[in-house]
Length: 169
Ligand SMILES: CC(C)(COP(=O)(O)OP(=O)(O)OC[C@H]1O[C@@H](n2cnc3c(N)ncnc32)[C@H](O)[C@@H]1OP(=O)(O)O)[C@@H](O)C(=O)NCCC(=O)NCCS
Image (cartoon, rainbow, N blue to C red; front, side, top):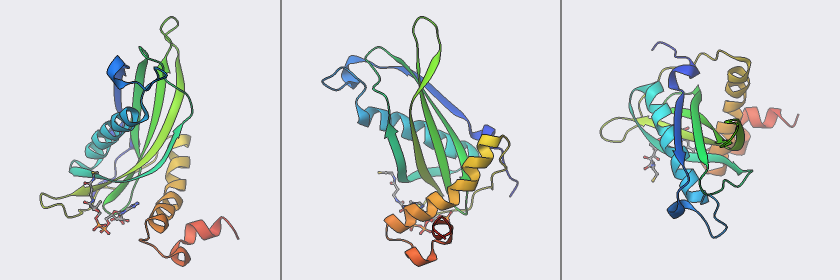
């Protein structure tokens, strides 16, 4: 299968924060942001694999900054690495200043998607060719994150997590 660039899976969702999507402090409700990130990441994984994809795991989420009611929020997702049937997708969340139009990074997350066939069984996806320095950094660290996710899910023995172990020796 021919490799694809991370930029080919780049997906951008821009939307407002409306009253029904906030917590009692009038900031964006965390579950709403998780759903927006899941949607963008799913489209991104689908663009890379051109298959049906399902969310296998949410590996990391950092809600670093509250996002107030009325904000314009941009969720940007890109596949950082593809394995056999699974893909790591990194999501960056930006908030736009109404007056200057400048975007500030508010949050980030890492999701794992798996490409499946019509009966829900995993199928192979194309590999990734990282382009930029950031793409390369994210690609290099992705195997470590996959092993951590599998160990935490009880799907890999800690002893087999070679990339993780390498951090401590
Ligand atoms: C995701 C799913 C297809 C994986 O099925 P499975 O029987 O575990 O299949 P496998 O063990 O062959 O794993 C498939 C791939 O997922 C990866 N994977 C599975 N669980 C993972 C986890 N917790 N973290 C990271 N990767 C994971 C495996 O490493 C494998 O990757 P690879 O093929 O690239 O090496 C299956 O668990 C599923 O359908 N889950 C429900 C998905 C869903 O409905 N999501 C929406 C949320 S409600």
